Amino acid sequence: MPELPEVETTRRGIRGAMRTHRVTGMVLREPRLRWPVDPALVRELPGQQVLDVRRRAKYLLIELERGTLVAHLGMSGSLRVLSPATPLLTHDHYDLLLDSGRCLRFNDPRRFGCLLWVTGDPAEHPLLAGLGPEPLEPGFDTDYLAARARGRKVAIKPFLMDQRVVVGVGNIYASEALFRAGINPRRAAGRMTRPQFERLVQAVQAVLGEAIRQGGTTLRDYVNAEGTPGYFRQKLYVYERAGEPCRQCGAAIRQVVLGQRSTYFCPRCQK
Ligand SMILES: [Zn+2]
Image 1 (cartoon, rainbow, N blue to C red):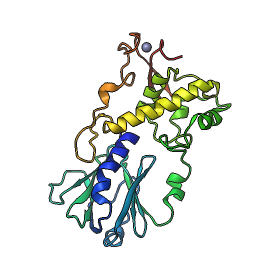
Image 2 (image 1 turned 135 degrees about the vertical axis):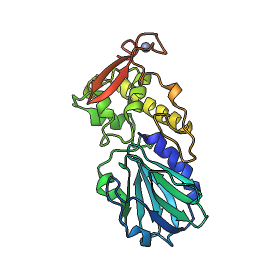
Image 3 (image 1 turned 60 degrees about the vertical axis):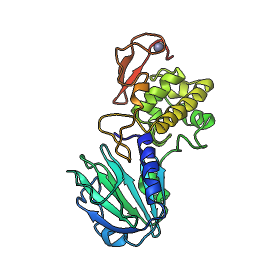
Image 4 (image 1 turned 135 degrees about the horizontal axis):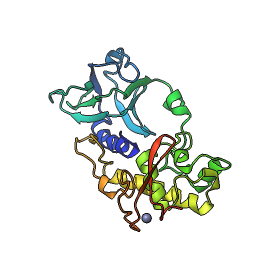
């Protein structure tokens, strides 16, 4: 599933090809995504200029003159900029045609992605309104995380993956950040020490930052905006390494289930 680094990689990949260009048309082949795509967009979008392509959590915000397209990649989606003449694949659901002669094409075999048109402030849309801060922006720091965790009995790993606490820290990155911070994923969030929160904030930012620089994680069929796979996978310390030796101490990596998600950690390095 595309996680925050993959979405950010996609944003960077499509922004340059879209910004300042005008939409000249839309081809909607399959409106039945997670929520139906409004067929009126085929008439609404042409003529509008793309002002910017931003990101909030795992949503891409394509800002046009009269509103914002809110796009999500779902479980298996990808957005690519290519020639409209590029032969269609089975799950190519829409094209946004641009005055540059190229198009933004969305492919999504499982159709959990979405494309919504929002005319007000997208930050107030129900999908975005309750979200916590961005992990790589100033609102996410030691004071914030410690305050949110106070009194909480939930384990630190599901706490960190709660989108109301901080957005975009998926299963891979939560596991990897906790390893780097030396924190056992089963520790109660409210029982963490201040130095642990400090290390965790730094580790989350380092892990996500590295993944973005390297173009996202190679997992299953993910490809970035140019269609090339990312290559973060070989740098993983614990994720999907159950039974293999810890890269730091040699102990066998353990797998447990926390909050219904597989969790990997080193019993010796993570306290
Ligand atoms: Zn270890």
